[in-house]
Amino acid sequence: MKSKIIAISLFTATAGAIALYPAYQSIGAVTPLAIQPIQPHAIEQITRERQRIEVVFALDTTGSMGGMIEAAKEKIWYIASSMASAESAPEIRMGLVAYRDRGDSYVTRVLDLSGDLDSMYAALMEFQAAGGGDGPESVNQALSDAVNRISWSQDDNSYKVVFLVGDAPPHMDYPNEVKYPETINRAKQRGIVINTIQCGDDRTTQRNWNRIAQLGSGSYFQVEQTGSALAISTPFDEQIAKLSEKLDQTRLYYGSEEEKQVQRKKLAATEKLHADASVESRARRATFNASKSGKANFLGKGELVDDIASGRVDISTIEREKLPAPMQAMAPAEQQALIDQKAATRKSLERQIDELAGQRADFIKQRVEARGDVEASLDYKLYSTVKEQAGKKGLHYEADAPAY
Image (cartoon, rainbow, N blue to C red; front, top):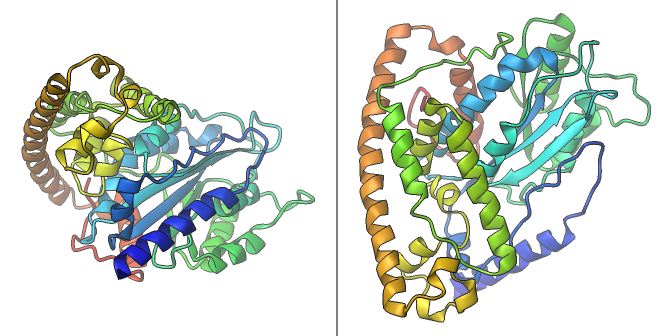
């Protein structure tokens, strides 16, 4: 009875939060990813005691940040995998605030927090460094958007964090703009930690970034203009990437037309990353998807094969028009045969990816140990920061180094 009451309460609270989440407009803003209504079979998942990590990157996308932007594109999946390596296998949600300055093609663009990292990554791939070049940037606006225009959870046990990444100080001379001390005060009230990553060595930026991190109960660290991220390729990356693409092809989606529209966008994002992302990045994504935390990103919502194979849904109860189009004209026996075939293929591919991922991890470990300079890398600094701060929320990371 107690678990039922908790489930009903959580469902009601979540629905209320969605209904009250305000619409907004801003110069150049991108509408956050739509929050989908919770399906009845998902109530059980909500009541499980899984902690959540919510991370938003406020990223300077002006011309001087080209190297860091490319590093971010390569490292998103490594960051997700490292965060997911906590013993409790937390749910990972990511968001992005890209910023420039007044007079550029946009001031900020916002991608809301989502567990659909494929779509977030596909959007990140579209960003190119441009604009800027005249000193201070719209850092105040970026931080305000990261705190106030993101659908942060109300859960006090969630690790909620902003990483401010840039190489120029904030404009403090813009009238009618909320300055960062006020925004940080709001962040602290909501339990959001703010860390700063300075690219380059500008002293004015250093002073501001240090102060922002101090006020935001976070950490400050400095990296080279290119990001100082380790670039490690392995002999296993290409094969893992190919197997991952085949694994994605085992997904079948069902639901209402509105739900199918969201699913089609996710599939399009996946196709884009297979076409345009580096082999190394796709291998990292496969490794993340193979983790317990990555399952939500791999499956999305309304994935038929997993729902049927797990016993959560009986295919005979699904309305014909909600099934994938190729299955709507099939006889029940044919439908079940297709699902069984997809499920068997999926298991085989997952086993192969898991084996290769283990070999990849061993290879990387040897390379990292041989280098001896990893503590200066962006990868190590990010992981160390997350490990320390998330630990205060009860998230335990056993490894001393990240999952490169």
